[in-house]
Image 1 (cartoon, one colour):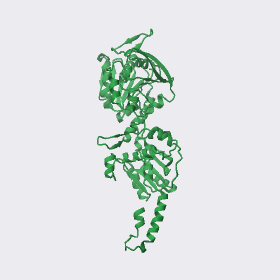
Image 2 (tube, rainbow, N blue to C red; image 1 turned 120 degrees about the horizontal axis):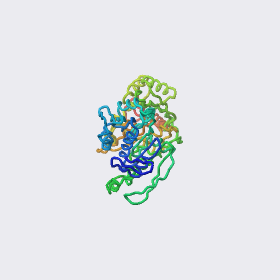
Image 3 (tube, rainbow, N blue to C red; image 1 turned 30 degrees about the vertical axis):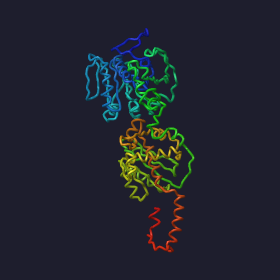
Image 4 (tube, one colour; image 1 turned 90 degrees about the horizontal axis):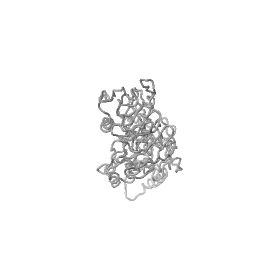
Length: 488
């Protein structure tokens, strides 16, 4: 790895010669470092070199490395780490327990943070540093969980620098709040040896955080046509994110709702219709997610009731009480998982409700089967159309806005539309999109209610028609429940 000596000369260890942007990130004194921003920028190499240096320079140091999936870490990051550590410096490596011990007493623990084993390890360690590869995949809860662990003291009584290291491609996630909200631009000029010219990049810095962008063009070790070939095949949004490292690009081709649509819907004035309703997304209390009840009238969402650790009985009781007090005409409930019990209780109380089984194809027509992967995709596409047309008003709830702007969709090989599973959204944006799902259920339930003005016209027309049925000259027979059968 490269180190700066007192004479400011560069010393190369293990034949590692960093690129100018890698060297800048290595030398930064900020506690929180974010490096990367594009594919081929040398993110993982920088990360493992930092980990190795912190273990060698501070004997007895304790660090943690991870990715969201343990299998991804072992296949990529761990292999790069083992390449740069001379075997003579390794005292032991326990792959089943997930740790590597140096002969100087330093230890690197590693785990996948999608597994309970990895979460438990975060809670039990005292650390001097940690490093996360593809950090945008890791939930925000893991970041909150690991921060209190940064309290390790070295065997000689010194304090290590407590670096927090993140390498990742751009994504709209919790890292944006950490590194970009308060950061200011600081130009950094270096000589591009590959192109033989000076280049300037903008660092994003605060006293405690720094973001150092690294692009394919900054990496002289890539093939000459690496970026050129990718530009031929990547759509414009992919170019902005994966080749130009643009954290502001939203990959609109993948996002279900454009952030501009969502922001425009905040406190929008819409026609208030006499269609009060509730939408409920039931969470698993042991996962720490929210149970959210959305209340509104027509396409105007008025409030969100959010709670954690609520039992099925408590959720059902609250729904029934709110439905009665607000005189709702529809309660839409997600029937998957624990929602089944809530639906049963609400049904027993004779509250008009719609049980929505998001993971099924229940009620699909032939057109639906050709168009949507499941009910979740159909429901969310309806929500997309409502936002795109400017028909929805939402409260100024930052979490709701972030969740609505973060859900992605794609197409399967057979052409059907699929909206990403909730767990994938949770991983990417750092929290479960419970508020967004509750709103989607609400709008879906409202769509099943009749327009009051049209209902009134129908009742008048039906009344006139039935009134004259005795005088019809054809002798037709009418059911006594004709009106209810047609318009109910």
